[in-house]
Length: 369
Image (tube, rainbow, N blue to C red):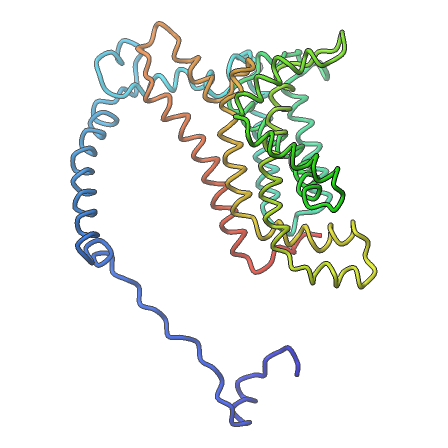
């Protein structure tokens, strides 16, 4: 029989009753979800009571008595000091980068954002997009570092804020993903030495906190290099984050590789495909498609882990917010500053989560070549 189903008219003429879709399920009323049983009622009442207690105080602090204009003296009277964020927004977003050159980190952020928006459609997952990312990342690093095209050179010790967070996330994933693929394939290899090396690397990195790996990259890595060779703090942090992300992504990919039916591999080999061709065209696309939610969780963790690079002397977004609070002229509005930083982190992580949720609901991920 053909794999395609016959139209309903042909089935009716043949006397076959076509299956009907199930009737639509009526949506559950909101009041029934909140007060459908005793436990839901108790939870709903406690939740509404908590909101009724906390929400008026929060609105009074943030809106009614919030300070939106003026200076530091106005913030000492009480209420949320939102004017502090307006005064220190550049320091929080760009760190101690020279104020007259802050158009350069802003341009780097726009390049990364533009490439991200361009790459959302699976139909654009091709080598042209990969080349655009390589050129865009290189241009962003060139703008930040300077020293060419008439740009003043700026050391990585002056970089900070949101560009550091975005660049470390982007570069650690770009370098860590190929390493993760190699480790995941090596862990499933039939060659004992390759398998033992892959397992040892993954388990060693996963068994250490990221802070420890950052300290190793900051202290031991310069000792291991030859005399006269030195790397800056950004490269040290990137090396630590790359190894960390590779180990965790490798375990995620291993779960996807185990979910690919062995018949797919045998069919590809029967058609004369090589091991690498089978892995690249048959195994890896299916394995990655199966673990999109887990990959999303790993990416979100890496974005938030960039806040630990302070231990190697870099001022990421969170560290720049802490530095802004050290100004003695202001009354140290910790809550407002951390809310602002948390909102940026939430916007990045929530956008990643929603995009991958949309991606995994697509009928196929094979739009890219």
